[in-house]
Image: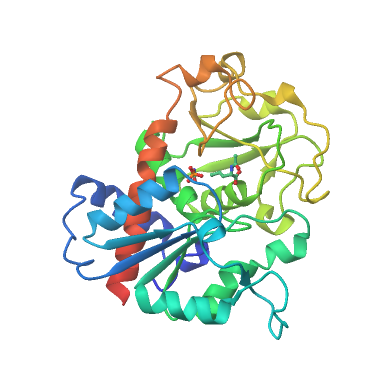
Amino acid sequence: MKHYTSIQDIKNLDELVQEAIELKKAPFEHKHLGENKTLGMIFYNPSLRTRLSTQRAGFNLGMNVIVMNIGSDGWALEFEDGAVMNEGKAEHIKEAAEVISQYCDIIAIRTFPELKDRELDYSEPVISAFKKYATKPIVSMESATGHPLQALADLITIEEHKIVAKPKVVLTWAPHPRTLPQAVPNSFVEYMKNSNKVDLVVTCPEGYELNPEVMEGVTVEHNQQKAFEGADFIYAKNWSSYENYGQAGDVDYSWIVDEAKMKNTNNGKFMHCLPVRRNVVVADDVMDNKERNITIAEANNRTYSAQVVLKNILENS
Ligand code: AN0
Ligand code: CP
């Protein structure tokens, strides 16, 4: 593996999931791989899980880890080629990416979308620029349009918790007071679609359909109750409209996931990438039900999704 910024960087998804599950049994077995190697983690946005689990993954592999909140602590970066930099931006990405590359052997980046210009966000301006100007492998820790470390952890979690060979996995849109990215659901759909081990259904209100390219070949059911019938896993996430890009719109709070809805499933497990707003996205009666709620185990797998990715990159370099 050279970079890890999307599912395209994975040769065989189901094999990578198995490798992560193996690695989880003996997480310190590859400590030699990261010896004298440095992982640089660059954050434009807040994080709890990604920050701690990716750092932990680096440590498990024997790496040194440097973390920087570049959005608040670094110089404001210019991304435009040929820009006359006489305003707010103090440093160009061309220098910054090359400089960081000298200090780090792998560069991981978190960069959310602005949610103003769809075309711009979907061109992945920050990740693409780092890929272009850095001389070291780039890992996405959630970019404008994808969260590939999360989706890999989700697939590992489903593999571990399933009780039927090919479970029905339902991605449901859920209410949220803020305008959120499509990154998590985009990657979730891509990974579920590319695994041979799950059947995916997406349910969302009209107008909240994801990017048609991502959704190609995926079943959409606008009736949430119908979608939940027979589901083995319910994966809840809010996302803002792709069609009316960046617009808040009216939030239908009736889409909350609660125990009454979960009763319609096949004794389904509840998943969410976290952080989650209780009693908005999901009710306490689901979150506090230890049989249903597997979000803590899911978050634990963030360490192993990051570790299997870093391991593959280290082995390749
Ligand atoms: C972010 C999102 O929806 O992309 C991060 C999720 C891991 N969530 C929030 O901003 C609440
Ligand atoms: N799921 C996830 O990426 O969480 P953080 O935003 O806390 O890193």
